[in-house]
Image (cartoon, rainbow, N blue to C red; front, side):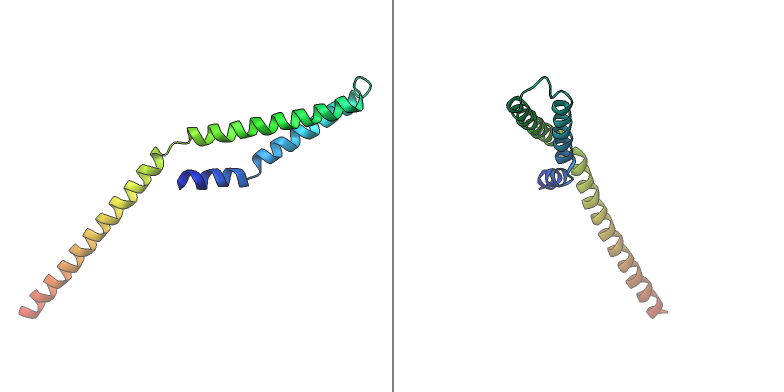
Length: 109
């Protein structure tokens, strides 16, 4: 669940779409400035090929980021919260017990 949420946030951030769009426009500008060296078919094939290559690279980057994402910190955070809740519950029970004891002492006097 944590990995799914992390990967969905990563994909929704638009970072990889920006990466692909930047590569697309850089390739387009490259072919535009070197238009005397390439035919229109070569330009279209080159732009499509580079865009597909960048999309593949971005998918590889996403998969590497997700596979290298460490859950150890999340596990420690969950354990800390669980222990903190247990300690707070015990302290609340102790406070209630102290209040009851002090009320009993006051009523005996």
